[in-house]
Length: 430
Image (tube, rainbow, N blue to C red; front, side, top):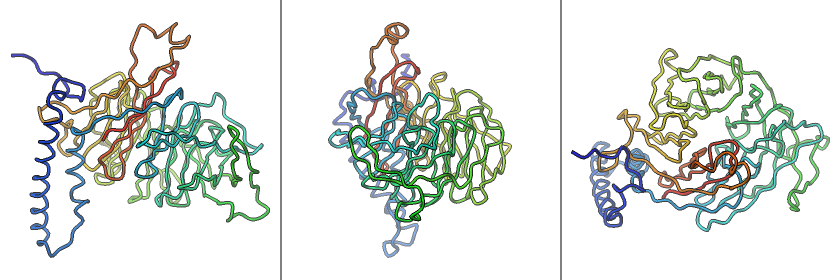
């Protein structure tokens, strides 16, 4: 008996033949499934007279059945280096942050790029050594403000949406790179840094400031005029006990708690109302703990490491559930919960899907694990590449991925995993 391939990807022999016909058949089959699903749910909730949220009921169904139908649209981004962060700003535009400290708005329909000038800090700000780009982009709950890194990578920048007009720069909260940003509500947000600290900020718009407060004069970046913005300092900054380099944040507003992941494999919980630590614990897997996400449905946090994903329930502090990565050694680089599905971005250019309810990786129709193999991206063949890397292939690590509001389109981006290589990848799976 011939052995079957380990995974079914969209570049494997399992999915290429008769793709158009198969997609047509699947769509027709799904239409029938949806009609039956709606009928059963209507009957369960009292018939057609009872109005129910069909989108909410269908969301778990969509999250499980969409991945096998996705096709890639890859973007050419020029010579930017490694996309570390991304966020949808509307139904067609995605904000991306790069290792070379560029904030770019990408139109996923046309592929056009719009570069947003970085916000300058005041003379009182001391920039971090060896700046390493934008690691986080976060939108407030009302989608009216966007927070990310400033020109000094240890300072906070806030823009107004949808125009991306400058709103505020937060400085003197950190002495090293800001690794992650999490909004608490429309006005307050938290930053976590490589300096082991957490800082709480309140957004102060220029029109809300007193005349005597320090407003930054209009600045220029790449010959573009930038309107003035407020300069502010954090409400409070505190060291995160036991942490060595705060790497990721995840906020659960249902429990008013902020989860903090540090690079030395500690998981911390903070009470955001008092901005104090509640607990901390060591993780089973101590290498390359660099990403984290939260599921309010399961009241669980997922932490990615070099070879595993650890699931942690804050209500059970002495238990951890581990998922073995299918690509051990390359690391888990990004994580996202969508209902029952945990989407996993790896360091080898593969996106995986794990079904939390079923306790196994999502499978294609042929019974094999469903995965997406991303495109080759762009890699600069410079002197470093020729001296140290030319004999090997380096697929793009998926440093960031985001679903749109419908859950039917997945934006994924990244670049080569070795620190010495310069390159990028971005693609839309739809």
